[in-house]
Length: 272
Ligand SMILES: [Zn+2]
Image (cartoon, rainbow, N blue to C red; front, side, top):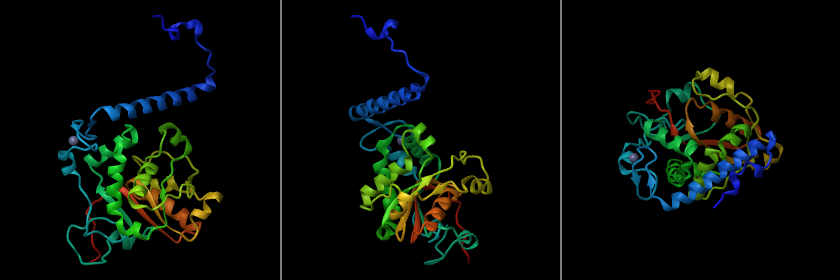
């Protein structure tokens, strides 16, 4: 049988302007095919690639994850190596208090959690989101009990376009499903295309993110007087969530907390 599509005579001329659209359509088709295959094939562990039953992490890799639990700084959520007693803040929280009220993370950022985040972000492993969302909900239980809405850290539309989805929005949707707290999808916009934060110093990161986030006019109603939780995949220097929290508070949010999947966590030093 002759496949008509291989006959050059039948190829439609394609304008250069249509190429990005075609590329995107092909990527979407690939993602749909991949999702269909995922239903038929056993999952692979997102970290070690061994076949795994159920969700996308094998028991061996799961046991290597470093979940964060108390004692930690009540403000920043940085784990303490010993228990200094209830309500004690870290030196970092006292010396340089953030705009947001409290931050919580499910796990420490290490090789295992990095592999999970990368699989979700770049590997089309959206099947990991419900599991990661449950861990986030667990870590943020106290925050979620008092919150009006979740605000995913937005991507600039150019990066969103290139990556097809926002991993923070995927995680926020999973947290929303697990906790029942709704998402404020219009609350925050990334208005500045920022360079990747990787490789920048703490000061450079803060400068890079300056003016990057804004509450748009049609997002005000989702922000004013409300208790919000910013959701992101990884917290490194905190510059991104700090920029977001400042924009939300300036627009009239009553309180802003932060919930991330993984955080870089040197052991916190207590103030005593
Ligand atoms: Zn594994």
